[in-house]
Image (tube, rainbow, N blue to C red; front, side, top):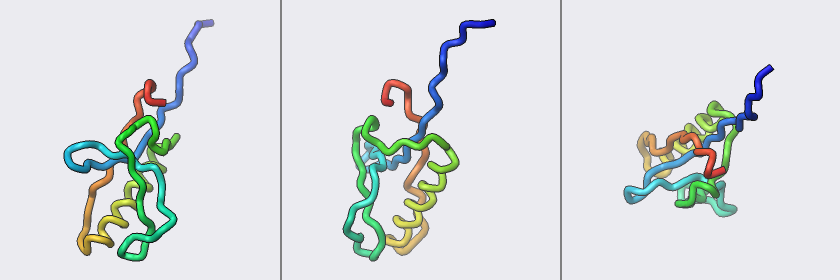
Length: 90
């Protein structure tokens, strides 16, 4: 029998760069954006980012947020990425 310390499950966030600085996804606004779809709330503070327990779910959110950006821009955009959250941010 070993004394293995309990491991914390890996958590993920969704982020994009704005003005050379990372911005993390918080959620959606109640108002719609100019293109008629959901507006996005972001924060520069990683410890306030929405957390995902699954990389797959975070990747699906990246696809959806890229879709929203693409719709607003009228061309395909790939602005969002999945970032593992360091334990000290949790």
